[in-house]
Length: 180
Image (cartoon, rainbow, N blue to C red; front, side, top):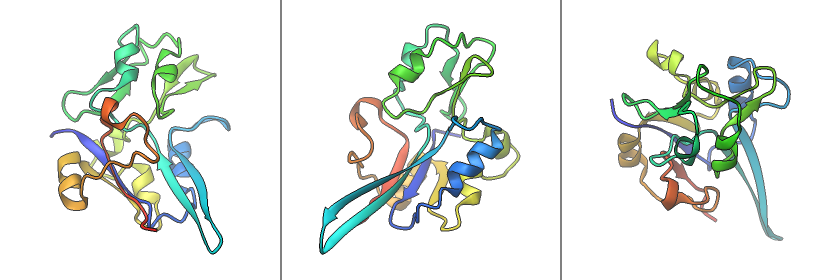
């Protein structure tokens, strides 16, 4: 298996936040903790206003700054699928990964005194299931798979509007943006 990634179809997303809630529920997170968040961006003006709903979790980057700057080696990429994960045994809770990630993916878990983040629901995919965010989306606006397969199927445009430092970190996401 190569590098896993996500595909987001912003034209289909209705902003219901079911992906965010299912992730929160699956990971048993506290009120102010999120591994996936849906952001709403409004723009335009009369007579053509718009709103984009953008779902963001860890992008499992090719060159993740969180891994590069983790002083204990707790944050690392799995060799078998490129998923960025946290080793709870090594995490010192220093928050360096939080400050390093341009996408806000890592979350400090106060009760544990450590960092957590989207781990691609590896426990579910290892059992042949979809990640919680994917299976819960009523619009089927999120897909997952080998990033090269997703790029071949959906294209490989760079959605820099919502993903800063794209060329520097090389996020493993494919985004279908709305046309205006």
